[in-house]
Length: 231
Image 1 (tube, rainbow, N blue to C red):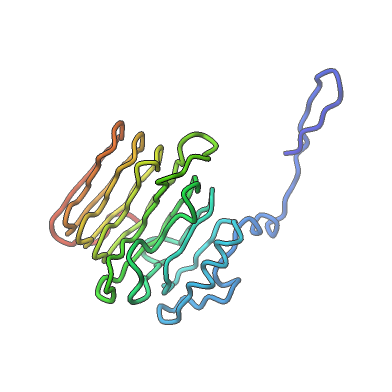
Image 2: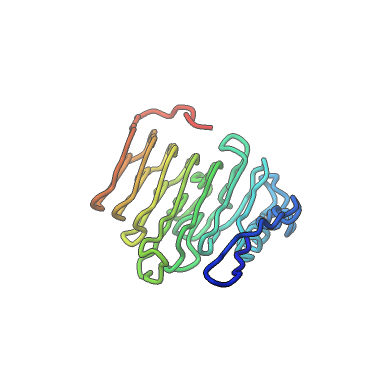
């Protein structure tokens, strides 16, 4: 909407219509930058180039072999579903996480509707699936970074499925299934965050939370691998 003043405090709004093509320009895809998405070709550069635009990134129903990725502020990565879209770690990546924040001040990062596979069998270093680390961050518009992870499957890590650092406050994690993460499914150090419909299977520690004032509904920890519950 465009707001226009007519004087004497009389303000009205005029609806601005946008075409489908204009709306699609709000997102980019790795294919725009040459990604293959066959699980064999390395797509790191194409995915990171899409992220570097600052726009939300839409992944297709493919498996993307990739190195570490870094999100910008208020940026989302979206797949088609945990059954159809997968980010798979390339072999022998440096220690850390496959999906990361670009810097400590990144806020409102999000992942939705995809699988993150840390590919533990081909890693020589500890590699987790998602690590949102705001350790020295302070330039957040609403005090808290408020990250979001929803309808995501995290699997095959020799380290941690999802890590939220102490400063990653006010985050929301819903409908997330974590399986076969050797150290922990979740390592939560932040405060004032919300967790709902969390399932851990065959992880060293299921849900490790040190922060205060977190809210968790429907937490299930199971010891044996099973199929994901959420699509």
